[in-house]
Amino acid sequence: MKEIAEWSVIALTTLTTLLTIGLVLIEFETIDTTLLAGIIAFVGAIIGGFITLIGVKRTIESNRLIENEKKIKEELMFLYPLQREVEEINEYIWFEYNENHAPYQEILNYVQKHLSIKRKLYEYAQRGSLEVYAELIKIKDFYDFMAMQIYESGEIEGVSDRKGFNLIQEKLADFQKLVRKEIRLKKSEIKN
Image (tube, rainbow, N blue to C red; front, side, top):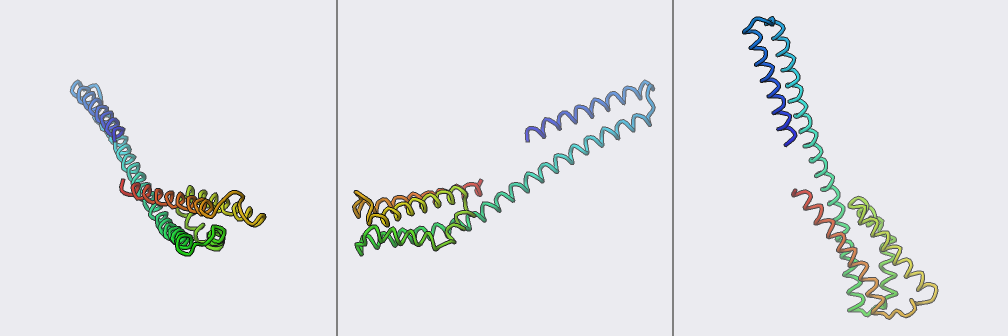
């Protein structure tokens, strides 16, 4: 906006100066009125072009804002189902560990299978936010690593059921926080 105001002042000053010079020259009859009319028309065309340029620039910026808001809303449409899926996994593992006293190996097996089978999770994450998608891949790799250690030796050395559950749950809780943060961030971008 400041740039537009500066250019407007320059354009108006130039036009006023040219008009004043033209009127002085006409008064002293040193310039033909046809030539003066041509000069005024030329300056008017430049000012008109400048005003058109400002309008086009504003239109492009407005369209860019509208497209950005549309993109953010589409990303939110994928982050909400992802959040719901992660909450369901988290609720399940809490219930299994605290109520059914399932060992962490079973809980890990469930989470790992869920992350392997549910391809929608990856689609939601990828379309919602690349940061969320990258974190989901890291979590999957972490769970795969844990599962590989359990497969090879029957357990993770030195890890009790409680500690194993905490390892699984902490990663999932951190991911849940990241998804919530992304949702809040995108919602605030829409408001602004």
